[in-house]
Image 1 (cartoon, helix red, strand yellow):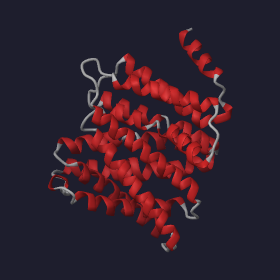
Image 2 (spheres, helix red, strand yellow):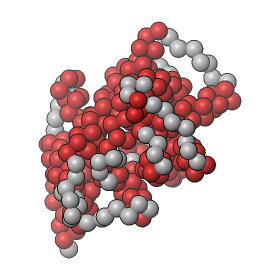
Image 3 (cartoon, helix red, strand yellow):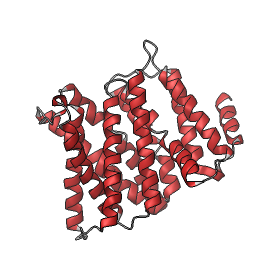
Length: 303
């Protein structure tokens, strides 16, 4: 059964990493960020609702649970808006890679606000992550990345980290399927409100069958399928292996950016990706990862 969990963990990471594949073609057809996100999450809500009805799950929610769900829904909306907006200022593959430093941010938040000790491995991970971001910031040979784009991705990463901390600390008693449904439902309502903050952000209908296809892709693959596969992976293989396999998310996004959208892949960018993935692995493995392992990895690479 562990092999089944590993396969599902890989599929979950790959599915989530296909976000740029759905978002960028919609941008090319003139669909704004608010509309892209709205169609992604609204379609996911419909799919999840059907799944809950088929399984005959109770839809009742307690008052204290709704407060937590509302907080999570807003956090998800903000994280998604800033992440998708960053695609306008930087390569999608680089944005997705920088986003994946959120496990490091989780460690910092837990230490600062919940008194979890910061180990030497945590410090090493933070250093590697920051070094990786610096490498990515100058990843292009012809131009540097937009400062605004980097800020948007860092904000998305921070909001994602806070989302994880809230889930961890709330200890809400609810099935993952039901929790995800209500979080996405609140997220969609927030996006509707966001779409009316400016005339440039009002919702647009997908202008072509091609656009409808990519909108459906966003709702099904990087949202619903990713969450379903992740749930199976955590139950069959465990949380730590699933999180490690999540490192395939930015690699998938980079691969799509290079192969589908013609984005550049330089040696500096590759090194930055390696640094960030090493940082994430250290945080995920925790005490099982000894700082000397870093030296061993680099010596093996040189040999």
